[in-house]
Length: 251
Image 1 (tube, rainbow, N blue to C red):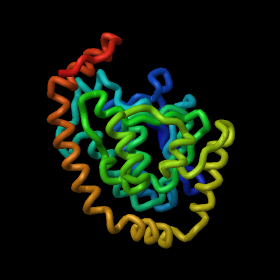
Image 2: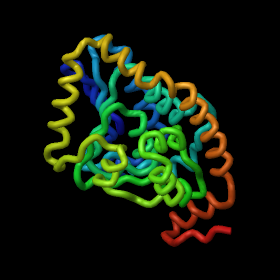
Image 3: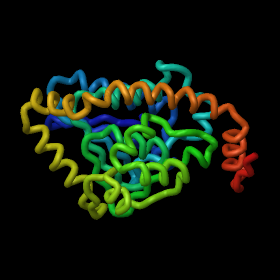
């Protein structure tokens, strides 16, 4: 299994675990992650969900070969199931980012309630570089969190940025030395798990209530554009260039 879930002490920890591929996510892994979130939601004893990655990496994003062979199709696709399970998770979600967080590795953080990163973590949303567009309602959530200029720079240019910059723009709550990351996240999760579960759920619901409709609509619109662009000439050139280890030449 490439996505594991461990439940103990009222905390469900979901970990991307494919370190030999920098935890790049396949369709099967999206399904595992979606099922894991649903399991954590249904488990009465779980108060908090932690998302992290093994091997010093969060996730390098989509496994491109698998992604091109199994592109997302409709609301029932594994990636859509995962995205919607995370978007609607009623329990607090805490992310621990030990290293690379590329593509959806960054955009999924926008749906987490608390995000902590190691000092060496790196982030990127390189959608335009692949001939694509934002996903997972990042076109709505990133400007809300970071402001238009930060969001425009990260989404239009798609260039990588470090943990200090992620903290400065509000994407990350706190940056810690790598060896302190998981102990700190576990301690934060334990604090949350000790609080009344109904209070946690209602507070999270109130925090997100005004955005739910907008986020759901944005995810649908982004996916429509994303799917169209994925079959276009620019994306084909970008992915071909990636395979051939060269710079793409766009029209």
